[in-house]
Amino acid sequence: MKISNEGSVSLHLPDSRKEVFYNPEMELSRDISVAFLQVVGNRNFVVCDLLSGGGARAIRYAKETSAKKVFANDANEYAARYVKENAALNEAENRVSVSCMGANDFLSRHKNLFDFIDIDPFGSPVYFMEELAKSSKPDSYLALTATDCGALAGVFPKTCAERYGIKLDRTECYKEVGVRNLVGMAAAHFKPHSLFVRPLLSHATEHYFRVFLKISRIGKLNTKYFYHCGKCGYCTFKSVAKCKYCKSTASKLGPVWASSLYDKAVCLEIAEKLKQRFRKSAEARKLVFTILDECDQPFYYNIHKISERLSANTPGMKNIIRELKKRGHEATRTQFSNTSIKTDAGLDNIKEIIKTFGGQQPRKR
Image (cartoon, rainbow, N blue to C red; front, side, top):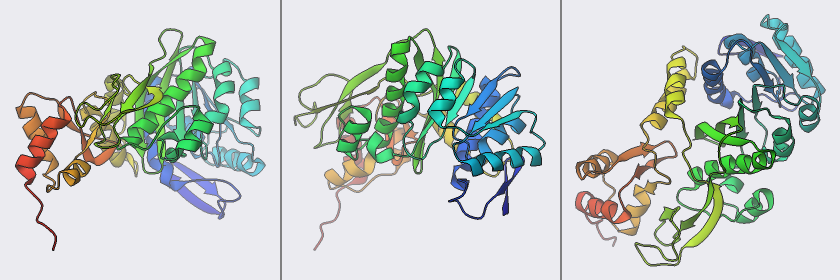
């Protein structure tokens, strides 16, 4: 048995991940999750960690937030045993209720109980969404993780169609498309139950997508088809038959979530909470500040790809952003790609700036 320290808790875990699942790479995700619950929660909150594994997330919720009760569930009996041991180790056994059930069975037996549900599966959360929509109450919160990023983002179109029921192809904005698909999937499951979702924070980090949603009776299903040009990479929610820049035929894809992926006021509060000196909190804070700075435009432009098509050297990102702002446009970096920008400027403006600042690439002999 080994001991792992994370946040303000200590965890007893088996030496083998085959016995009980614990992923240390998700510590950043758990830091952000704790900060989120610190912002939206209160002392009356009842929290559910539906797929608890070794209990790291559940016990951190119990120790580091004001939640009244945390339900930790896992179908693996060894996991349930370790959650109990870890709750006792951290003197949180009175606030952590442990169960060993299938996730959908657990949800069906605990309807309208939880103020915040966290689902962090291996793969897709789609298999729990129907029961989740039936079990959730208005004015509650939901956190979803998905690790099947290729399917969600359309990198694997056939799997995407089978699993999510929509048509997607790989685009240069595939990470944002994947996050929009995840939110749209959740929204589509809640709509038949007269419930609506609104994203408060969304991010794409390493091997997973993560979204935090507010569930309420008031809202609308903000999903739309978008149009993608396979030749120049242009994406837009505006209905077009041909790309406005290269006149190639545009593919109609989706539908995906078409509105904002963030609530900037909530994100700012989360950034403040992340001042805690946890191991990953500085990295998490940097991510949230990138989101705060990001202009609220759908889709982004990959500067390296555009430069490559123009056979031009890639200018510095700061130069492009500065020049776009000088011309009266919004322009920022984006959390989704280190080589991309978000802007309300057109692709033709970006090409002109690249040609001006990048110059022509030397010919290869």
